[in-house]
Length: 332
Ligand code: SF4
Image 1 (tube, rainbow, N blue to C red):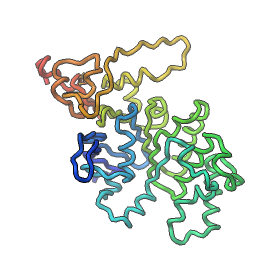
Image 2: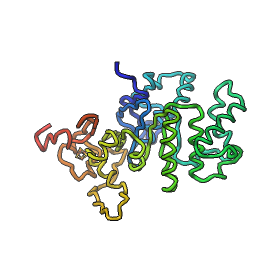
Image 3: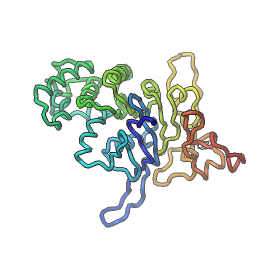
Image 4: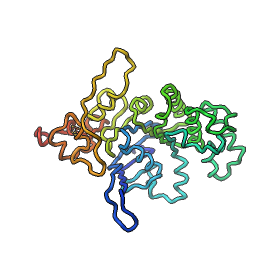
């Protein structure tokens, strides 16, 4: 029997109303997540990449049930989390934790580090103050801080140190899955590498699975086993990191890869000929949502939306270039 994935996202949709009120209908709907499906295995690091506004952060919040979906399901170990009672959801929340982008606003400035790190533990009965302090001391050391830091306030730390506190807080309930939402994008480049290395070390030590959300492909490539690229609420490419970097199949992925800096002073990168603006979410384009910006666009792209299909083993893409030119080329 095939192993049940730790997380299974099935045909997930999230729409937000625009305008309207209690007695009036919304003026329009914005489709933030559009029929997204993927799974994450135990011990896997899964990357979600895309430009700001592509729906990746909404997807991360749906996975933690910080938002309710319009339709679709998310299964943790086979159980649909959207059908769980409030009590059952509490234990699920302990199994899934989030690390936020901004290490400045995500920590309460009035709380000492000990209270911040042990906050999730206080919801669990039978955890004495001494036990909570012991856990916090151990976690601070594991994330590279000192036990004396328990008595300090967030403003006494640098950005990188604050993110380490956020990581310690996420780990204090021993989660199985951590959703890290742009966890290094607010940090200096030199600090980013340290924090990414910390994520890798902690993954092995705590037997974690990650969903790593980022606009920066180089960050996700470094830490993830598989990567999904999102555009306009949909996954447009999904593959192993190795396959993805060597043979990107979606034109949008090509643009993301070209934006990754190459640490070679002799390397000259060619600008990708992408034109047009990000589509208006209130008035999405017909056909492939990327077609107004795609240099390879042809007739079929403007009228039919490609589905995410397996173009080569375990490499999925939503692009007519990989699925047949249809109307114009005569093949499918
Ligand atoms: Fe470009 Fe067409 Fe592929 Fe969309 S379907 S990415 S417009 S080639």
